[in-house]
Length: 336
Image (cartoon, rainbow, N blue to C red; front, side, top):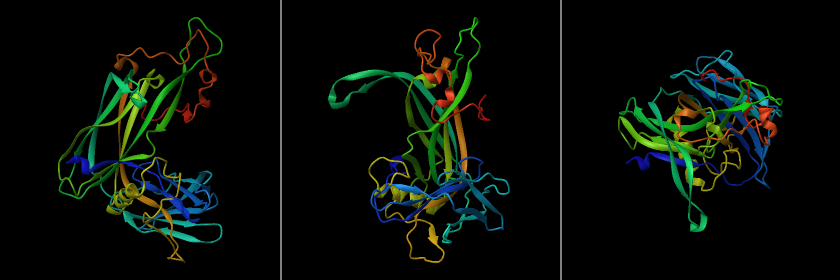
């Protein structure tokens, strides 16, 4: 039964004429409230970021806050005057430099739909090589999730995405006796960016979604100290679920959501002065809840090699771990 209700979606899109692409969200949390704006190139399908737009989220009760530019074409809500609340209705307003105005259809933030529990298994598995050239054994950590639906009688719509954060040790260039403790960098990635897990509560009225495999990770240097997996649950409106579900129907190859335009998937965004203009993307209003699990080095039976040993060749990242992609030295508030 679960097969038709929990899907892995590959996000990819087809080429088309030059169009405005707006994609982002407001959530009940303080993280992930971003908007990306670009214009598609009709020749290559590449995205040209738009960095001079005025972007606001507006609530039905009159609250209003601007998304501020943090990177080319990327805007972030810092929740100085507005934080998303379940039961409140929101819409997005975007004004481009030429005066063109765009809005999203109003949407009401849902209540939390479910409670998730993560667990893991560390084991050695055989991986089949390409072209049936035998198998190879690899140490892996498999992550599973069980979900309790809070109000199974309702039509609940849920999307999950997975985020990993792990610690990387930075050491001093000179060797000291005894060696001082390492300085840690915290590295974060969204796992399988092109994939989204969906649940359609119209098809399955059950109090529990059974334990299922969410992802499998090679037991590499990511597990040398502490590794955190986060399952971010987004409770969606029916229309937001429709968007993600339709996106799956029109895409069949891998790619992130900004690799190409979103083809014929209907958006909830429109041009205020020209309703006939087709706008790509979506503004999502969702209640979020994050479940985390910590895997320490001693929780696995594997002998994981230190990435920066005292003896032997080491890379530059061992002395400056900030050169690693997505690396920061500011410890996330939820890290022990």
